[in-house]
Each structure stands twice: as C-alpha cells, then as structure tokens.
Length: 62
Image 1 (cartoon, rainbow, N blue to C red):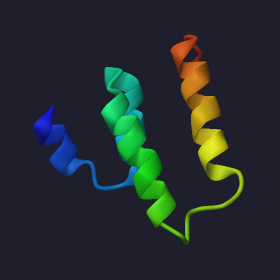
Image 2: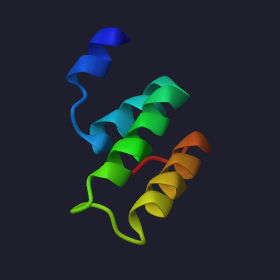
Image 3: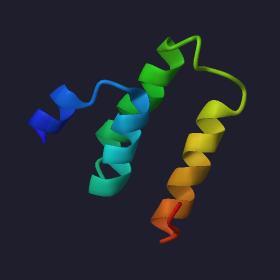
C-alpha cells in the first residue's frame, strides 16, 4: 500500500485507488489534495467525486 501511495501523484488517481482498495485514507487524501489544486477546484468537483464514490460502492461501473 505504501508503494501505491508514493506513485499516486494526482488526486484523481488517489481517489480511484481509494475506491478500488476501499481505503478511506486515499479518498480523504484525494479530496484534500484536490482542495489544494485551485486550478482544478470548482463547485462541482468534490460533490462529483463523492457521487462517483457512492455509485461505485453500490456496484455501478463507469
């Protein structure tokens, strides 16, 4: 898991790893990292990520 953390440089990748592995730390880190990426942050971004997480947890694929 530590190796994944080192290689996951984007918030999107961290979020995906968190969803796939079920590790809440990756998901929380992704959201925190996204908040620091001001150019990527908008009003829809974080709610959109959370909505995707909800769908993925229910078994829906993208």
